[in-house]
Length: 88
Image (cartoon, rainbow, N blue to C red):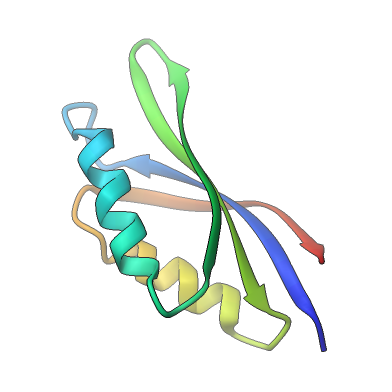
């Protein structure tokens, strides 16, 4: 089996959440679980910001769910959505 590139969008739990510090917490949470390919801050609307990230995970059952679960446990994260999944 190969690897899968997954694009995720993380929305903060509140508009007052510091997205920059949340990005650092996300990077730390993903260490050892998957390869972080890209992470960026993204404007959503009316001053609300989100985090868009691309990770590389092995093409195995449950790996994407494990990444989503780990991201949900980060302080300040309100919602995690998978935008794209593609084989690498």
